Length: 209
Image (tube, rainbow, N blue to C red):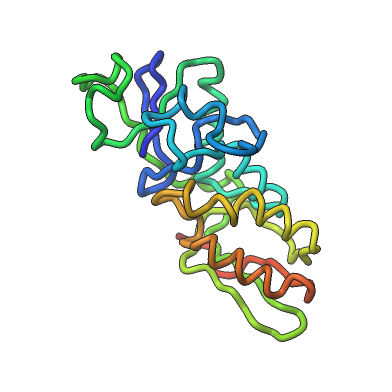
């Protein structure tokens, strides 16, 4: 899945795999019941795959204090093209399902993901969750570029918010764009299991990529 600005003929995805996280909107309102009110105008099928918005899911990461570079870059793209006609589509979509601007055209420029430069304030780290009671750990599968954070104890309210905005919608809304290589359904289950133990979130790893 990629996001295309129909006005500027620019297209982008999230991270190295050019994936997607939710509908291409900074709107943080949840969909409520049924399909999101924006899905028919922002994606090919208007189906359940992308019912929550990027803004809604991104706010769940930020609630925990996580600023991941690949998500920040995609957010910047949406900011830069605010008010433009944005559309999310998969390469295998049939031509008749696409806006006329994308049918048979090859003049759209794809923006490749680039890692942050030195001095931008991001570190290449793994994300770790530790249970302060039973000492169990949840370690990310891969490091990612993230702004530094202090070890953070997660309250039950924070875990609940993360579940609503990231864990619960992740299966249907995150495609080839898992920050830190995490399957967020699995992390959601782990956090629910340890939520009364005040788990701590922190970063681990080397400085370089």
